[in-house]
Image (tube, rainbow, N blue to C red; front, side, top):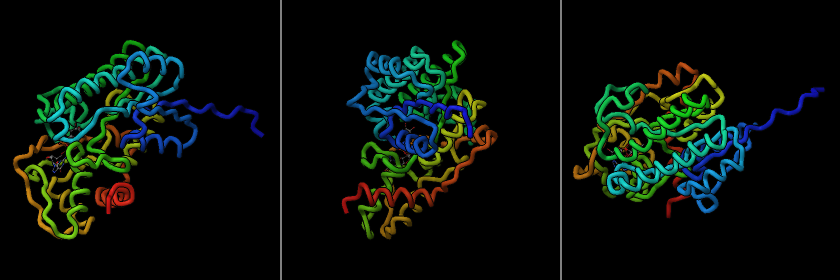
Length: 314
Ligand code: GFB
């Protein structure tokens, strides 16, 4: 019989555990086992409060912190509330990342976003493209905050020898998504729009339909994050995605078919397109040995099933 003590669980703080990515990674770590997952609601711990956040991190002695907490939203929310996006994200990430360093937390995984890359850049976008060109105006404040978080992690790693690194997901969707039509991202917004227009009322889709976006299901994001956590050679900035993208028109038509809507799609050209394309180069991730499992049409079906069970009024 083994006399060795059982391996001590890795104590991890999942900041933002109620959100789209945070809830997925918390679920994945619990399922995996070997992790003591700690979470706090906004009422229990205000991540905008530096003193409270630093005190919590100092008291808890985590082995790992996952920064999935952020002020997030779609193209319209970013355009309408730029000061909220930059100020809140700078505060949350600085309190968590610098606070983790002050508390001697050895490892931290920060969640970036593909919108940090330049608006005009070669596609698919490699990690090296960061800061090589002008940002997309519709979400530049948010992107600047996220870029600051990436550099803060890098600097702590370089100056203090810790393992603070960044995963860069594309447009994420899945359980606990935001379906508010003003602040959400395109995929959940269109699920709700087509569902509420059943069977054949017209559906308005913003922009030209030409932009291309890469979508990754939150369960795949969580699986990739766990993979990166458990592969110490993963460091710095790593794109996490499928490496493929679809046009907004293709996305709308796929969602329309999954929902079973048969009415007309109307395009509102008064709304901005944002990035012409955001497809990430995932060579580094594939080289480490991880690939996505959930293809877009299957993921949309899963997301629609979740929406009908948890959100739809009828
Ligand atoms: O998902 P989305 O809001 O954000 O918009 P981004 C993606 C594309 O879908 C844009 C179009 O071209 C939108 O004009 N779209 C069409 C719609 N219909 C709709 C709709 O009903 N709702 C929404 N929201 N879009 C975000 C950044 O950019 O990407 C965030 O603003 C974050 O900061 C996120 O980085 C991942 O993909 O353009």
